[in-house]
Image: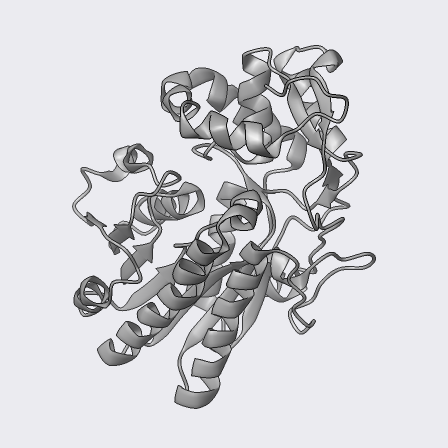
Length: 339
């Protein structure tokens, strides 16, 4: 299989690239990545010398680049996205450009090249806050942030192409993902790296928002199963499927793993429109033989250890613009300075 992986220098995309070249050594992988702040070429160092790998810096919204690459491959797996809810609240236009228009450009290129399969990597956040039960693939989409709305918009384009052009697309909706090589603005790497430096762990609101945390290795094996065994025209949830973990529990798990005091927990003003709970029903993907293998406790232990051992990777990222963003978004409830 010849695969174009867009957003392949990002957190989940780079794991998919590393996994693919390790598990399917006869495959060829071309990575297209714009290298925004969250795209890091160092994430691809473990596979850069392999014969099946090639990297191209570029934007999925640029049709000329995309069309050329689409003619060289059989499949596109689209990870490229603006992906942080907090950033979408500040700059929603960037999210629409990449997550909606970029998806359109990719599908047009795939149609012109005659691809037999296209995978749109989406998120469980398109379902909105789930007060009880679990989201199934047929549930309505009720996004509540510009980020989740842009991902839902991309999905709706995919649906329209499937109906209008018989476009051979599969959609995966992943739950909150964590693990190695994750840019440290997301809750788990932020908490880990702050705790290593004895900085406060900023917990939104009352800390009771629940997420179905999934290790990045399990997320990528789920996408791989959907790509290779999934039915064209179907959508697949990819989540751990447990009871979920809230923000306080995330902080406590990290502090325990690193031997740090509970006094580092700091409650900050809640995110606007903060979804209270996500939960996925993953029976459809499990029927194809997939199941997560990394439980939360083991995954967190491994992740904390990775950030301890790879400080040369993340320390340069936590400077300049990162701290400006941090100060804007984590305002303590009781007036103390954040960070």
